[in-house]
Length: 169
Image (cartoon, rainbow, N blue to C red; front, side, top):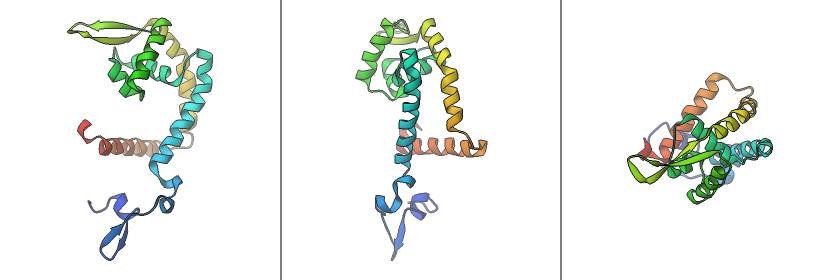
């Protein structure tokens, strides 16, 4: 382990030249990063789910429209990864979204086996109507957090992701 890392200092206890692993109880849930991240995510999803009902959307559909609103198109696999949705769930959800006219599937020109998912004008309009609500909730979540704190959080989150997925670099 590299010297100066959080897990070496705060989370590790030196006992006669060896480091002992603390228990979860010793760390505490309110200091255990994955638990906090899950709490934030669950609360975020619950807050948005209430608002999404009026738009006849769920959180996965909203995330899909959000991703497609900033990218020209994506495959099912890419969307599943970016929206944190199981591929089988994504496929069924896209069927529903296509029948609602929110997305359309097109064959990729260079590989007819691959379907690209595109947002329709109806889907884009729906997301644009929901975005002010989502942005307002986002701002509320960040209330009292300085720009420096937010930048440190983002940098830390990216480092954690790189630690978990070093191949994605």
